[in-house]
Amino acid sequence: MAEIIKEENGEKRSHNFIEVIVEKDLKEGKNDGRVQTRFPPEPNGYLHIGHAKAICLDFGIAAAHGGVCNLRFDDTNPTKEEVEYVEAIKEDIQWLGYQWGNEYYASDYFPQLWNFALRLIKEGKAYIDEQTSEQIAAQKGTPTQPGTDSPYRNRPVDESLDLFQRMNTGEIPEGAMVLRAKIDMSSPNMHFRDPIIYRVVNHPHHRTGTTWKAYPMYDFAHGQSDYFEGVTHSLCTLEFVPHRPLYDLFVDWVKEGTDLQDHRPNQYEFNKLNLNYTLMSKRNLLVLVKEGLVGGWDDPRMPTLCAFRRRGYSPESIHKFIDKIGYTTFDALNEFALLESAVREDLNMRATRVAAVLNPVKLVITNYPEGVVEQLEAVNNPENPEEGSHLIEFSRELWVEREDFMEDAPKKYFRMTPGQEVRLKNAYIVKCTGCHKDADGNITDITCEYDPHTKSGMPEANRKVKGTLHWVSAAHCIEAEVRLYDRLWKVENPRDEMATLCQERGCSSLEAMKEMINPDSLQILPRCYVEKFASTMPPLSYLQFQRIGYFNVDPDSTPARPVFNRTVGLKDTWGKMNK
Image (tube, rainbow, N blue to C red; front, side, top):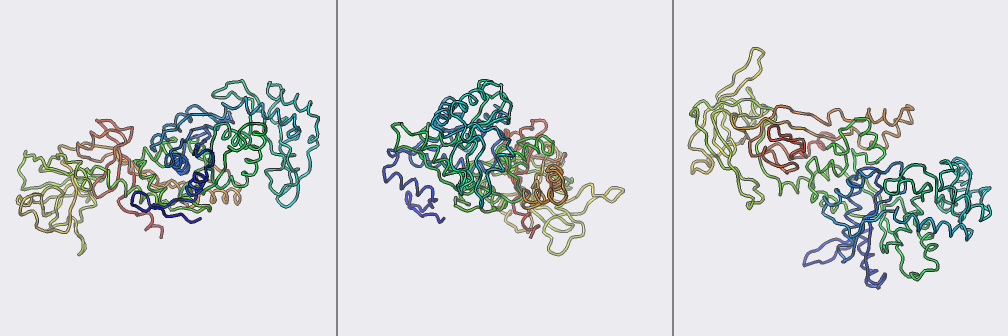
């Protein structure tokens, strides 16, 4: 669905189709001119990048129209939900820059949902079914064939009421019976074929303990929770399109006999965020964590928001990416490279520039006076002069990148090679004079001579050379660990590839995962050197290692042993390799 271009504060901005719907509702005076949304995650795992798209829409729509967005945890399955996930979800939402109006839980409404279910039984709209899950699935039919009635469909109301009460006492084992809504077993919409609305779960709840044994299903709790809270626009992803008629029917049923006939939530659907080279199923992410295939939910190779935060992505870069892909009514597979380009754009404006050498080799300036140390000025961020500068030490012996030297270089090689001049960034022009090697032929150090009249800022410093190299002073830098992260998966669509492998070979999901994981997704460089200024940065600071890429300070970092994560390279090398 096409986006609408609107003028806002003298600038053109595209309004997605949901914004257009909301503005139309406001003009027509619906819901007393209110806009109220909600973000309803299930606390069964950490939020991933796909959730960020829903968060930005739910909170953004409310904020843009003077409304409120509430946070409501869908905690209807106690076997998978934990307080740890609740707290992590709240932290991620706040990191993205949002604050919810109210904090709710589906479990807040368990008494109301229970009473609603009792009412449905009494009205002949629900019944207790004692068939197995396999029997229920079989008698539901297929999309082209109607279902057949359950043998318990016309069970006496009093009997269903009694059994429903017993479902919540603990005497009924899990799977022995369920409560089903009585709707239409011949409906073309499979969700209308007497859906299960309550089941038995004999597991303590993270908030209600052992108060409840019978728990509502998502389809039964979701719309009613929206209604109880006064939600006006219930925004969901496209897989909920076939659920919408059931959502509306349950809302119709629950509001019967109330004085809120004209105030109801309406569900609207938008496309999911799908990324290539990414697996975003929380179930599969949990497997990765539990099997030790990654270092945890915040492993920087994971697609979780806490992992992106640890890797060095800014919340602004996530917003920028979501703005680029937009909201539509059809699913698409987005390029991970587009997300990385949004990160580069953002970090280019905010990252502090520092020098770091990842594969060091000694550079000795033979004509520089021994024992002399100069303090040179380095600009913190050329894109933002207000961030100022810091001082770096320059001395006779430096560390440079081993890849920046070639003893026998081709014609258009503009880095360090004997007889050729290069500029040392923020410092002097030097001419390489040679190198020394060990008994095995490995280069141990490079020698050069400097021109003292070419210091950056001097009148004669404008002499042109084609190469500029970064460096750190060997006596004044800090040894650091650098972690180079790459894509976790070797294949573009790991979800489909995993399903194919499991079907063709009869292997487990775990075995398929292990085969598809990129063995080079993490490379740890234990002996790198960074300038002292970089080692003083607090965890999660945004940095650009000059000429290398964007990095950040990992929470594992200490002043004595700083640790840096590569966020993204300066250029998209992955895309070029895979063309």
